Image (cartoon, rainbow, N blue to C red):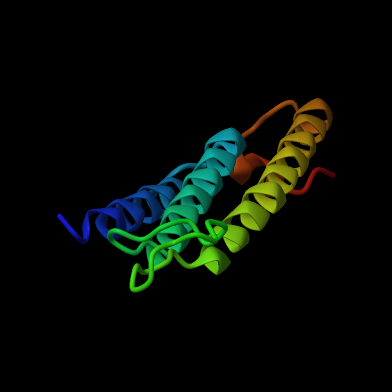
Length: 114
């Protein structure tokens, strides 16, 4: 069970990649990218996990007790904020594309009109 978080992260990234490769709908592509982001965030948090570790902000830890790494947690919080902003930007672009082209199919959007 020790590698369950890493396996779940790999599964999330795999599902997201499958959604990117097999789907043509722009909303589904955005969902696939968000699933990949969740898998990467889970992987980062799993890297910093220490069994029996205490929070690094806890200053009265008994001697010899391991502490959890704070760096992956900080990176994950930063990645969540950046991911939220990029997802909002992607969805805004998708709305604009739908208003101008009338479709969400990525194959039809690539076709030149003329």
